[in-house]
Length: 227
Ligand SMILES: Nc1ncnc2c1ncn2[C@@H]1O[C@H](COP(=O)(O)OP(=O)(O)OP(=O)(O)O)[C@@H](O)[C@H]1O
Image (cartoon, rainbow, N blue to C red; front, side):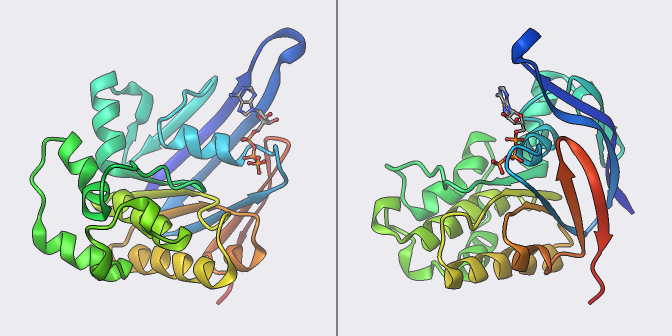
């Protein structure tokens, strides 16, 4: 089943001599449960693509349809709810709230959404993240890998259909990078989540089902990985 359909997507920034075409007429589809790696040189448009799919920025032209609905056809309120419930965003810098502990950071999206915390799901998630004995620690009391696991927990607490990760291991050593990717892959399989990961790391890209390569805002290859 197709979950994401991108048609003729264009994004330009600035005007006149400062005009930059970040994405230049991109089209592709993603099936539910697919793990897609997005690779390409610096400035090729990878983060822009993720921001547009996550509804963080608006395209200049083109459409993004998720689960049969064009995301920018939604009202601003609907779009905010869609972003909170259907999309999990993971960044290179963990963006945790420094004064909230591990459990509070992970459950923040539920609180912002006025929803009750399902303790069973929370404990299961904290267990998967390997943070059982860090629940009341503050971000500054955690290692980089642990902080990234908290940010993944925050992205997954709503059980989103789509997980978008922008260089999620960009700040981590090999062992932690490996653990983070294993975690994202586990969640991708267990919850049949669709996972899009922007990465510079070829080893990570090769673990995906499919690799999209961007160059100067164009898709120059779209390869399925044979396993
Ligand atoms: N807010 C912005 N204003 C102006 N130009 C921008 C903005 N964001 C991105 N760009 C430009 O759009 C192009 C694509 O940027 P983008 O961040 O998507 O690339 P990227 O492939 O993710 O790069 P990197 O691997 O370095 O993170 C770049 O040329 C960049 O300078």
